[in-house]
Length: 348
Image 1 (cartoon, helix red, strand yellow):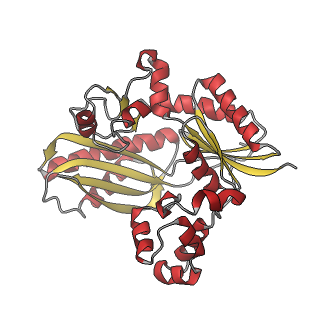
Image 2 (image 1 turned 90 degrees about the horizontal axis):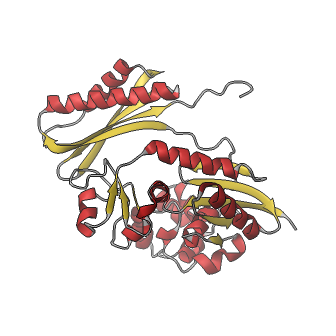
Image 3 (image 1 turned 60 degrees about the vertical axis):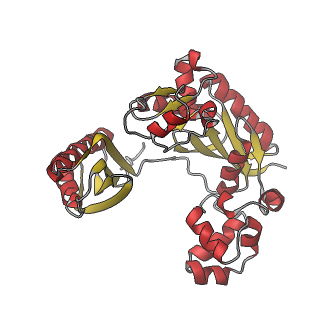
């Protein structure tokens, strides 16, 4: 009998895979994508191919560290336009199926399907995506978003994995709470203080005890994660960016506050250009400063009225910067515009 399932599609090593399509000679070689592709400069890893991950290279790692772990890796600059174009092809392919499709980012999407055989349906998706885009994906199948998201992680790479409610206990109860989507190391440490270290223990914990420790909303929510419960909604309007951000890492630390201010102003104007290009308005501006050696702090300013005016965005960024104590060398500045929801035209 046909019933509804939620699928989570995750493109395998997406950015590295796109780079291999453009450069077939990179097949089988360790690829690291980040910054402008120069590992001698400051910057972080955006993605690492499976071959590079074998050397312990991971996303968000400094490029210099990645180079130390494998000097023979191929380092490439980030090419956002190429990745967006490849992602659009994949998402257009998903929309050829009888399913609700919610784009969740460049390399992932949720689908809601009604079928008797979700595994066969998922394999058909894999085949069509590969045929049309030459990109491999992994698909997780669940009764809700949580289960589907976790299932795709278990299915990596190029697999199809089912994690529905009837399989939850046997698949999840023996695993650490950090395996749950939504629980990080800090929350896991707090749970461990209560003697809760596994998903099964979390599922069996009284919600009242969790509410006392984590609050009346978060406590019961954590318990529901342990039981594998979650939203089954899929929103076909898809993923919409909630902000636009730019950041710059300096090859030498900045020690002059005026120089830091100039860089923040320049970065703010770049963000304003991005807003105008997307026909969006900013409701708030947040400035990020990373001090040497690696301490990061943020401060934000909210606009009286949303805007995309470059002068106003730069002025707000300058006001946010005033809240920092610029008494240490600065290695990175960033500016993020938190955007208002896009305006939807009638009949669009």
